Image (cartoon, rainbow, N blue to C red; front, side, top):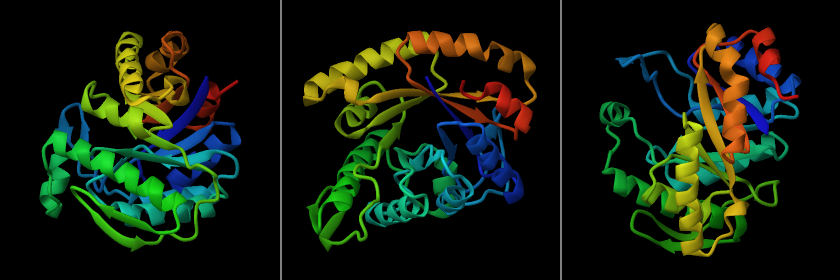
Length: 276
């Protein structure tokens, strides 16, 4: 099973850089951050932590690492126009030498939207935005010019040059809504990531995704299945239980696990959890 590492950009840059470099050196498949503008919640309490912007730090991550793939798990579709985001992604793909994993989701953090004056529509509308954005972005990466008249965005002879270095940038969609979100996954994703799913949850959701794939005429084997596991670097009990938890997830069909750290781990901890 592929194994990756993630940390939020809520720590000093030197700490982030060390984490990225260590994970790269230790052979992790990919390294991830997240897309928020200030800290979220811990034990139900709001956090207003100083936070570095996701895609700017992703460009830095692309230069610090040499082998690991890089991505944002996941970009909120409400925060940026999809044509602008497509160009940002191409830039990171070039900076990384073709190692970008393009993570995107429907966004969920309402307070962040309200404080910044960003519209926060219903969940159904945000998922529809995700569907349309994925179509626009893929077309901009592959077509010379794009005309698009949609529900949310309109493009006229839109350019996105240069094209990505990769023949196909993987789209990684995060979320586990069984009806609408997984249908968007079936249509557009090269990888689906479910946050904090148990093996039992994963079997249930994966079966629903297979049904959506059948409905849209997609081979479900084309979509890599992944999960995020959240942990503190000093939680020895949780870390000690990870091998058995990962084995259970693999038996449930998970092909990629992302270890998402709430606190920066030492290199020794990362080495202990590194892929074989």
